[in-house]
Length: 44
Image: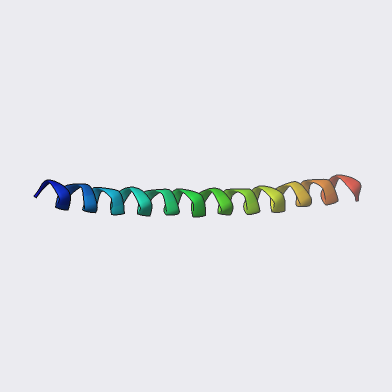
């Protein structure tokens, strides 16, 4: 029973970490796009 709990817990943690990593990547991409728009907008 204990090993089952740690196993499912580990899977949940891995899933959370993966989701957090994807969310962070998405934030970075969006941030870069916004920065580019601002830079291009200020140049025009």
